[in-house]
Length: 281
Image (cartoon, rainbow, N blue to C red; front, side, top):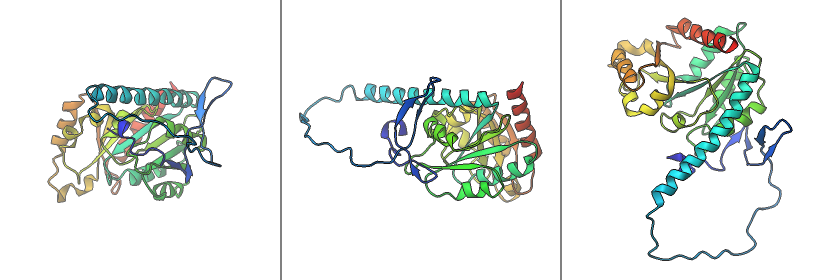
């Protein structure tokens, strides 16, 4: 699991600027860590002695791994709580969009922003390992967007999102869409402070994805079955996909959608507006 392998450690950038730990606490008690440039080095001047015994035991390795995972997730949960408080203070609905690569998340986001223009202010945090292409597509709609590049990292965490929020205007009563890195595994474990995860499953994937990646579908509040305009050309069985998803999460809501033809878009927009109304209530 990436919480222990540290796959993206030290490679995250926000709008091209490196993200390094530099933690401090504000007068209101909120703790933040901010990116900073390195001047000089953090090298070790002295030598450390490491005693290696060729037959030392690894009996407790699994318990140490579990403890490390718990520590990392606990730290993430603390940052997520800060993000959640920030969203609550602004009356902002935050949704975490998760999927495999190529599900059509960004295209769906563009269509959503264009359809809600004049009704709701939408800001976007874009997560990708490399490039700023998706953030540029979002900005072209007129919506504010911040790009997080995770390098080798396979998910966004609450710490990264907290930093991105510092550069993103949040309008009271608006919506924040967080487009996570394309991956149906690790993003399931990381709470970003969002009101809900929305999993996008495209019909060009197998309908058995909910059973192969149950943690993600169990964590999601809504499943969007995207690219439905392609169904006449594919063997994808929609009812079977919905059945598999509800086998792991009986409460998951489902909307069939096509960002290309607009099928289901009105239902998706109504779902967002209802969720926003719930935040405002």
